[in-house]
Image (cartoon, rainbow, N blue to C red):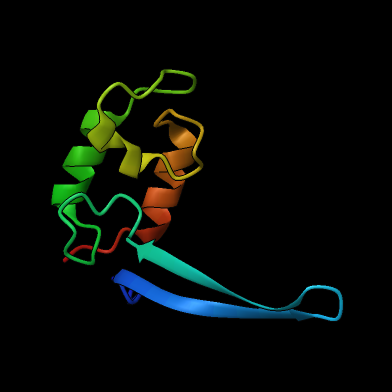
Length: 94
């Protein structure tokens, strides 16, 4: 099933108040993208699976191509079965 997240770049402000520090305003920015959506079209389909398959190295095999970082769902610097489980859970086709 396609993932209907609001992809893109967002900015905003967070206001924090404290009796000790007064009021502070913090500017924030966030970039939202779909895990393993290598063509950035908002879905996980066969194109993305082909890319994922090319990046798959196994547990403990470090990522050497920086483009494969999008396939590392758990941030442990490898593309393995844990990442495949995350991919399969989101996979839905075009």
